[in-house]
Amino acid sequence: MSTENLTSRVFNDMDPALLSFIKKYVTSFVKWDLLHFFHQNPHTIDTVENIARYAGRAPDTVQRELAQLARSGLLESSQMGEMVIYALTSSPQIQTNLAQFVAASQDKQFRIRATYHVIRDMCRH
Image (cartoon, rainbow, N blue to C red; front, side, top):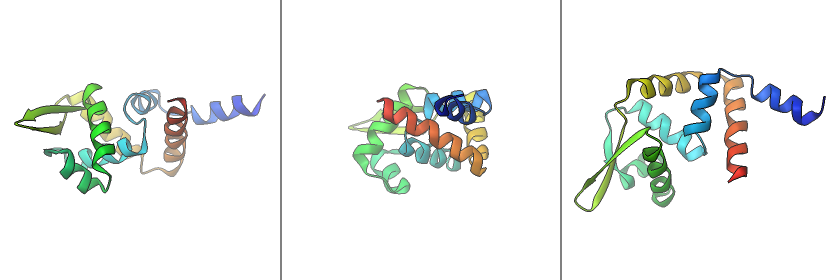
């Protein structure tokens, strides 16, 4: 068996629902941080600048990632005058999946596998 096949098999050995969640929503480390932020602060409704400050990230990067998370349905965005504000989706299924991802992230082996998928996705784009 080739090294690539073994690596792929080892790193794909995770709950299919969590793997699907990662491939859909956790396509960068900034998004990973933002998902943790919204999980820990589920009632947050705020601007890019404030979310970036809380997350300790650059506003330009956070703006791009928040917009992608809104397009994918994990976040909701609204226009308030000249500002766009973001909030966690009200979808119970997505909130449950997010909670499962955050809980799984407490496990070192899961984080290693998830990191592999994030890096692989980042290299493809």
